[in-house]
Length: 242
Image (cartoon, rainbow, N blue to C red; front, top):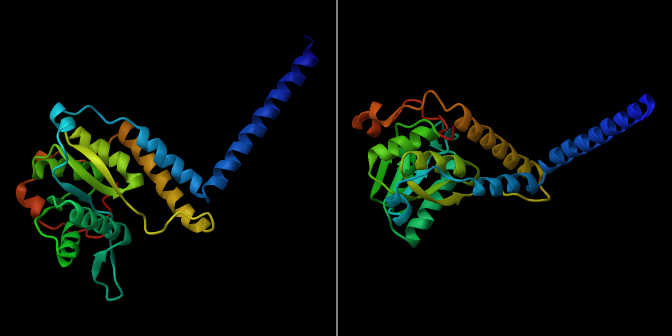
């Protein structure tokens, strides 16, 4: 093959690669404004394997609900209240509890507010752990707070894979009970779909971070006293989905 023919072939390959790459990028960007992207991420997350756990954790049935805090906000009177993420998780826990009463473990700085909401809706027997400030600590401090082998884990569907992995690393098997996001996917509402896509992208990045470079501030449960596990933390507005 002559030099000129080789150059023509090379330019054709570059041109095709550019077209395919550009088309793929455009399709991904467009999908961010539809339900497709976020649904694909949730599906991929559901296929990810969990770390090895003790046989007892794998064979025992769930014995409690664990609700992970999703953040706090302020109302019009500047009073601290559950944000919409945490509120949906509390509602999911309440619905599950009324179907199957089991102890409810509340994990995160939001625990006092989650507990208050649940008690106002006729649910007691709550166990709180409000020292944790991120997902890794949710798992470690829950394992420290109460002996558990298998739980129903309540958080949103994007956070679920990362949370289940952290609980598995602490010897706790989990059955997911996803709480809905404040807005629903809707083909006719691109802004709603984009909020789901942003949540999905954040969780992909956080999951990869946990695999490649785990958080340095994830303290061992043994570094926290029982009193700390029961004492409210100062930064109430901190989101524990980190």
